[in-house]
Image (cartoon, rainbow, N blue to C red; front, side, top):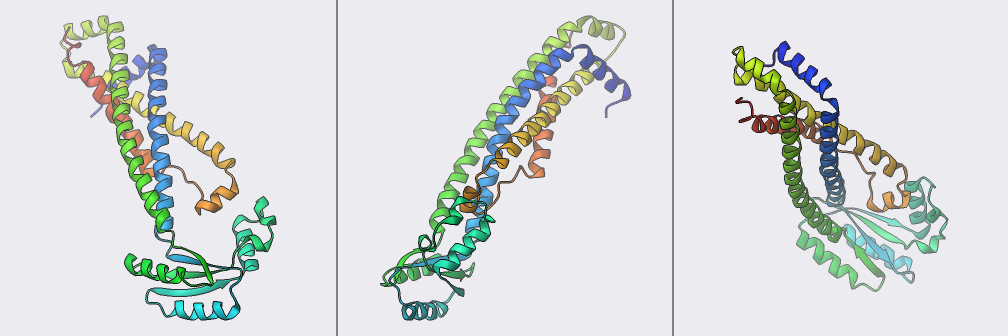
Length: 293
């Protein structure tokens, strides 16, 4: 437990050495910005992956030469396939109108003619439909003369899954770098602070103060540095995210199928808590021997 005396001593010490602490907080913020940016990218990639994984749909794109009889026969056949829960036909005009609605008319692509949007049959696919059955259906449908292509979005899901896995690994390695940077920056700062307060520490030791009593304000200062550095990084990321999102092309958002989101609050809280723990740990380790004056 931290006493009022410990808090006051830590506050007085930070105000006295505010330039040194400010430099340390800035350095920590830069390190946490790198980690937070990586986590932000991974979080959005994971959202995109889940969106495509749970799409539960497939699109059968038709050739321009497909007759209405071909379309009706294909719709009836697909409706009887096990695992297919819905079949909807979209003409070129309807596909263009749906695209315009999704973009709220804010894209230049809305002005494209209907011929630029192929007619298609959209399928709702059950989540528990085996991938082998879906692949078999796709292979058979692709062989039909009226069909130009079939998109199940599974290839995109697999690519995104690999990308997310790589991002998680990279974030883990970056986290180790950040941990090392925090320990080094806070440790060096606390050593300098201790040297500047050596006279104060000597007086406390002479009047019978224990090592724990002497260390507590320094450990608290290290924890505060970590908290401020992590919180500052979150604030910087928030500003950068708002700027980037404000300039995000609507066409790109429509293509990926979701709007980018900021870091989930558990990650934000975790980063700040991590900063506090690392800062306190670095201060405690750096003072382990230097307090013995």
